[in-house]
Amino acid sequence: MLGVDVGAVRVGLAVSDETRTVASPLATLERTSRDLWARLRGEVATRDVRCAVVGLPRRLDGSEGDSAADARRFADALGAELGVEVDLWDERFTTAQAEREMISAGVRRDKRRRSIDAVAAALLLQSWLDAHRDRAP
Image (cartoon, rainbow, N blue to C red; front, side, top):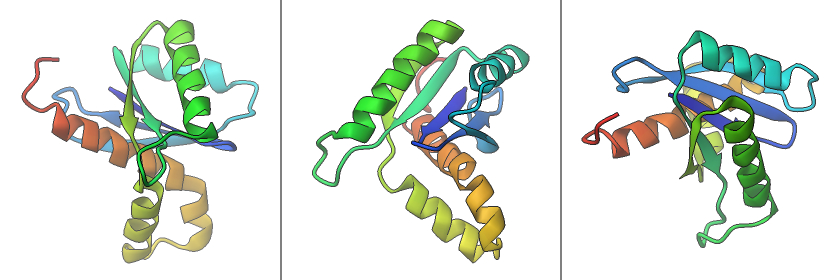
């Protein structure tokens, strides 16, 4: 499984273990990077990813705005470009939660900025894994 936190500037990636039990941060990629799709393709191939979970940023009331529309477009492109199943998952508060956890762990501000998107991707993927624990892969 691949978790994807899509932002305007960066894309955070996380992966699950083979048993789909634990999600771990993997990388933060610059969204405007020319090699974004090549890196994503490489991670999918190397890790034998069959499904990607893309964070869907909803508003507090559950409605969707421009960021959600952007995430949906990215999810569609991800499925088409990489040939993997894509599931959208509510990602409200994952970045704030990632920030709190990193501060609690004593991670310096400059390192938090570089890795927060990958940690947020791990949180959203872990949430998806927990919700789908009893379902067959």
